[in-house]
Length: 98
Image (cartoon, rainbow, N blue to C red):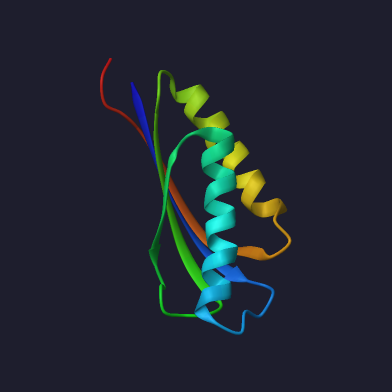
């Protein structure tokens, strides 16, 4: 069993004029990630800044290869979003049981 932990530092390209608009954009992104991949996803930082967000994602997979593939698809989904840009990211895939 493998656990994948991901963190994305995101810049919002559309200048939201309020935290409410920022939250709408981030919620939409989180919902798309969850609906497509059924992974745990949350806004984990930069909650009070209009143009930045930090997203954390975690999931479990039966193999490391599948975990890499899922991570790659999540990265592609976020990267294809027109309203956001990935500024920084981190991910780790850890084997927790053989």
